[in-house]
Length: 221
Image 1: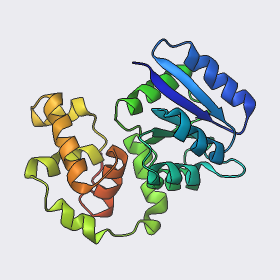
Image 2: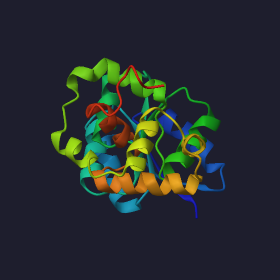
Image 3: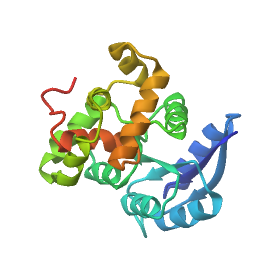
């Protein structure tokens, strides 16, 4: 089954470039293009994309608000934020709004395709170094989540350990090696902890781990 992708960018040349790259892949289908966030939200409702490539800075409705509306509306689409600057404050806001990761606009075609396939599979694209830099820059704006702190108590010891390793930037394979279990077991633990904590994906789990103090910047690897 092909991955349905919606491209949202206010620059026609950028959209055309992404479309050309994506349409050359047998497992990816471009289901629409939007030139602002409002169009993206409307098109997503009609075309049901699995992944939305979302530019941040656009007229009418920016990528942050569009992401927020899609997530709040229950859209199953995974949102990949596109930006020119990796420490753009809008990126932080988009991640908090529910984006599954972000890419710089100068990303190579291979990395773009890899990112789309990663988030389409239900994973999240946010390198640990990027996570730390975002959190360091915006630490003051991170609210303490008392409810989530209490929810952590509902995790098993193994789920807590998986969350800690996840927040340290380890992949499923690396977590499996660390805990000497299968990747399938790791995926089961991650699905369970996301469900218990009421989180959308791994990005939100990483942020929550920092917010609640389970992992600190100094301890992240």
